[in-house]
Length: 159
Image (cartoon, rainbow, N blue to C red; front, side, top):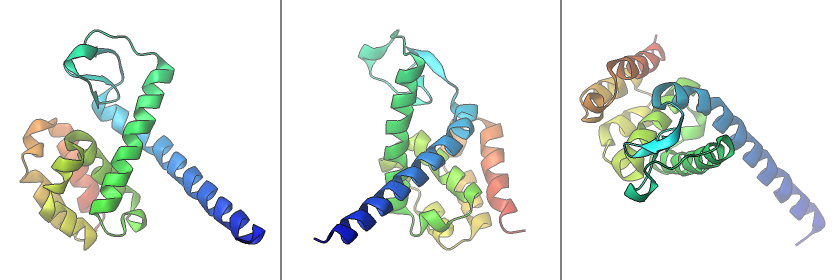
């Protein structure tokens, strides 16, 4: 391989990593608002909505540990939504936030079950995607304010 090719590949890799880091930094306050930030592992979660095992109960997580857990969880979430929603990166920011928030709550396997929602998001039919969210089991598992926020964000994309 030529040196020019390797330099170009390195630049693309670094710019992609930087863009992902920017997105992670943008998503963190949004998801923290809904999930909270817990230093103590209780009730099956810690950090920013991170699921913990039974053995992790009553452990204390420092800010750097919470940040590392968040970055790992975000990397998993972004891979999941990119694999399940065609052209995820070209979606409007609010659609990305909602998709990541839903995946954050249900995980990759659960996110795959949102077939109608994912199909509507891919087709840029945001009001239909909002209706699919309201009709899901997830809607009864999150706070009414979170559901309302997500539905409004999607519906506002079609105004």
